[in-house]
Figure 1 (cartoon, rainbow, N blue to C red):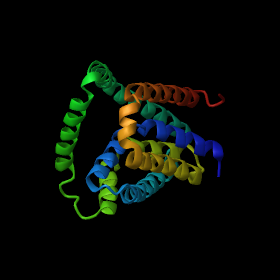
Figure 2 (figure 1 turned 90 degrees about the horizontal axis):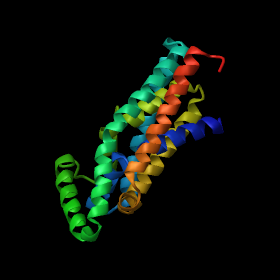
Figure 3 (figure 1 turned 45 degrees about the horizontal axis):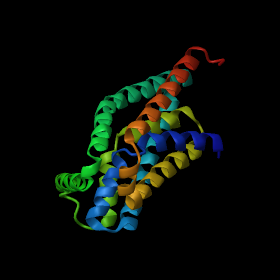
Figure 4 (figure 1 turned 135 degrees about the horizontal axis):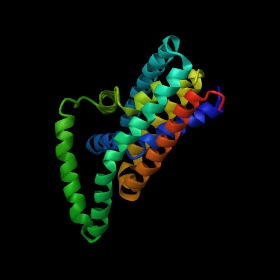
Length: 221
């Protein structure tokens, strides 16, 4: 197992999903069921399956596509993801300003947010009423299947041949975020600025994407 590969994969996925909808989904379900451990266990199992599927497809890709072409495609994928993330910056900035302006009306705002979340939950999770394990599993599996985290895992597993390191890095990053969402979701959303997290993530993806594209044309770098 390569600690370097593990660290790269863990860091990229952790930053990419930190403060993203994954944690908000888990937090919302936890509010409804009030059983964070069971919710988190269900979500963790879902990510184990999703990461395994991503590793499988990433490994297959390497059998048919040359490594240099994989690096080139992966570099463009990182840039595309960064560009897609940039779209959210304006909205996050407006939310940040609004949050600062309305600081004195915090209680009223929290009530509005709670009502909005309750309404959203009823729309999203009307089918999920059996138990917290199933709620955590099915919500994460449905929402994250084919999403950014899985695409990144496929990309990284096609770049790094050490699939064990990639699997553990991706699985642990997403699992840690799931447990954070279950236990500290409310505090996290309140204290951490998603705007600045998004800037860090976008910058990181752009840098990595450019490096991969350059090294595809100049393999000796």
